[in-house]
Length: 395
Ligand code: SF4
Image 1 (tube, rainbow, N blue to C red):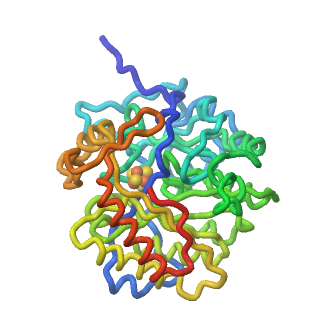
Image 2 (image 1 turned 45 degrees about the vertical axis):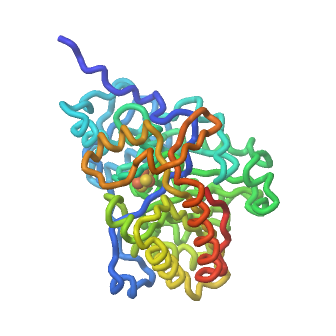
């Protein structure tokens, strides 16, 4: 009898080629809900994986043991694997495999290749991965085309080694360190390329430890991550010393309503922005993926006004914006239409221009005139509606 090959948990889920930091947002608040924006945020939903496994090597790591203890304290059983191979993930159909993988959390040791950090332009000097995979269901998720195999979320047990490894990168980097405009950020480390930190941190505590690490690291460095979740309670009292910038991935209400499943509401995220800003964190908006849907000027105008209300009166506000337009690749389109066969998301090559990346990838982006119009609008409206907000990049 043929046995299921299983999923090799030591194989990286994603290739070396870095995508943009992930982007997303969630269910939607009404205008009335949003009028109640004030700390503390309503509790965000917490992901409860159906299955949690740990590899033998991960159990040898102190942080692996901490994750297991944390997960078990939540009443979730943890399966101790005898090897790095995980079986029982593949279903009869692609949908079934997707559903099983998306509800599975694997505690593993990071692949050795991950210790050689890669630049992550235009976001940060270096990309540092604390996990790969995400339990949310955004129908445009750029990760879809980057990940190989069933999308089991992997969290890294060797966190202490991952963080210790960063010291040798201080003062290096070609993205923010070499930019006159952004060099005040120091050497930057982006920790949300292949995952969503706040979707997982209640199970791992990894990003809390990373914030602590950077808080205690008296050097010109900055940790950066972006999220579509809102459970910031544990982060509010932390000694971050301004060396972590948390950005919230936000979008117009029609985009969040239609295509962002399983994330925190826009209301929750905006309340979380406020709470972290009041706690002295540098904060940011990742407005992504920007889509020129019908009435987009009104919808994005509404979003910027909601943000303005959320940060109103915050002393010494340090707010940035990163603007990323929607794009897709042949691979991401194939995966996403397999996962979400009834999606209404526009992924029509005929309506797009082709952009060739330096890793040989071909992306389908909006045509030049559409991009120019979008950028002109955002540049003007951000300056008008959020005058204190610094735009870091547009792409
Ligand atoms: Fe993808 Fe998760 Fe980000 Fe949504 S929240 S875009 S599913 S990584």
